[in-house]
Image (cartoon, rainbow, N blue to C red; front, side, top):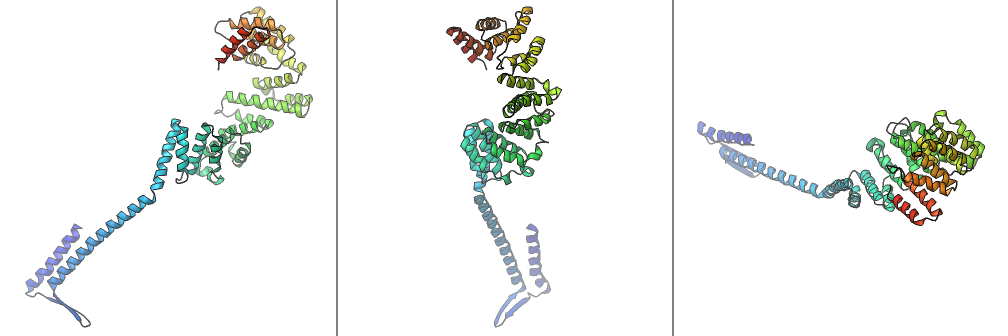
Length: 397
């Protein structure tokens, strides 16, 4: 701008000085029809300069006004969107801080105006789920169309969150439809595999779960505890289905088809024993449990034995008492004898074993022991002691 003004001044000065140097002022005559304009060169130059400066100032003012108008319009036009972004950020912060009610409120308000509609509704659904608001959770999930769950754009996490919420509310039909749509990820993502197993257990597709467990055991991201829990549910359901839908022979045949490695897994063995005990199939059951008790090396299975609905336990009691003869202060064998005697309705023997267990150092008795002991004491008409055992059990996790 300064350069232009300087050049203009030099130009005007040249115009003004040049006529003086030549001794002539110089005239300009402009004729348009009957109308004529006559002026000196100096006057015309000055008028042109003034006109030029007026045009520059006018343009600058107009441009500034236009810029102001566009900026003001932009602020008005996108005010609601900026507010929605603030609400979205505040909603996420509230969700992280555990204020689920506020998080749900803010995220729902910010869902439509922003570009994060799917994320906002998913988090709002999760916040509602944590409050136990089932209807709200289902409503927010319905706002997310299949098109919005585009893995390439939003990642697999959105699908995982949606599936988890559907499973939390036992919506098996929608969860299955969604899982089947993204089934190709089950073999590549351990989280999808885990959800497939959980859903299949809800659908009582136990044999399908047994097959999927082979893949789950190879996933280091899935804990051994989780695998054991799935194994217990899957094999318990599979064994039960075999005997109910077919017969005992079908159960035996299925057990015999299992690999030796599977038959050595604690949860699989105890699931098979549970079904045998439940249906009173004592001979094959005894062939598994009696060697287990006699060997006495698997404390986990011995503890699980106490949970079985056993009816024929005489041989097991004899084998347990032999162990106690060599070690009268063994918590494992006192517990086993107490529970076996209870199942056999030998109340005095059960009470004696439980009392001995309760008086061992370190308080080895667990909640199941106390609840069973209370049952024995109630049967023996000892209500005060039974109540004391129940109160102690109530304090345990």
